[in-house]
Image 1 (cartoon, rainbow, N blue to C red):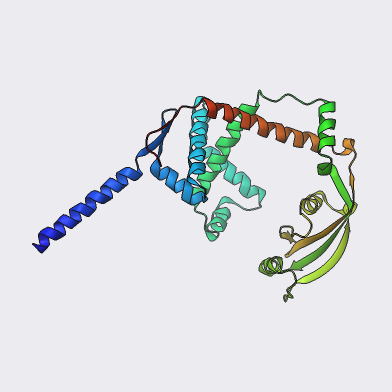
Image 2: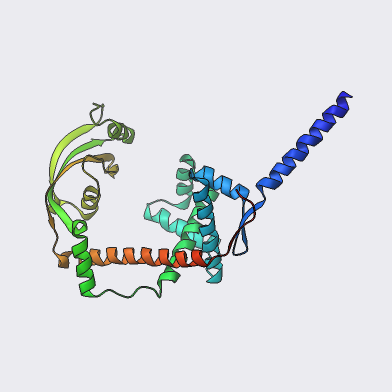
Amino acid sequence: MIKKTTLFLCSSLFALSTAFAGLVDAVSIVVNDQPITLYEIYKTEKSLGVPKTKAIELLIKKRIKEEELERLGISVDDYDVMNEIERIAKQNGIDTLQMRTILAKQGVRWEEYKKNIKERLLQERLYRRILSTKIQSPSEETLKEYYRLHIKEFSLPQKIEVIQYSSADRKALEAVMRNPLASLRGVVRKQEVLDTEGLNRELLYLLTRTPKGEFTQIIPVGGQFVVFLVQDFINTEPVPFEKVKEKVFAMWMEQKQQEAIESHFEKLRAAASVKVLRTP
């Protein structure tokens, strides 16, 4: 009797688990004949920490993007992925084996990293194809108008008041960023007023993009690490248009590209056939 009861319970549990698995893998939504399962919705919701409605919309857009990649015949193979990884490694002064070791220490799985690189390359190629016929070169007057409307973006302070923290220990600087008033061994604190004319372009960009009262990112400098706490921008004035014309063009182009891509996918989304088979 006990054996029969046990067998009955086991078979019931198996039936329930099978039914649950079937439900989880069940198709919830069909986008242009492409399925989205209940499990995909659940997984997206949990992994991204977004509401269910947002997870569904993200998956719908993903299916539309996948369909567009197929329609345009855009693909990325393993050779493309490894070439890109080698390029990134070389840019950072390391080889792919060293990169793999560094990623492993950071808890990043190699296959996952390759997958992310592939997705990025696919997106870049897709966006390049979309943009190839959508944006015409701007006139001088268009750029000047953009410059006038975004004048703050093209203004620079004459001086920047900062507190510079330096140390051979990166973690010590991370502790300072959590508590600027802490006195930590091995950390040198220095109050400075920097003349922007004497700064290199990278540091100037970093400092001017950091809001007052906040830290820059930590910068490696000749065997040491440095971080700046930005305190104030002094005598901020617009840079003449001719001196920042290339930057104006780059920012205008970036905005137009973003608008064109959003418009392209909004039209595809509006035209898409979306059928709900099971309410998530």
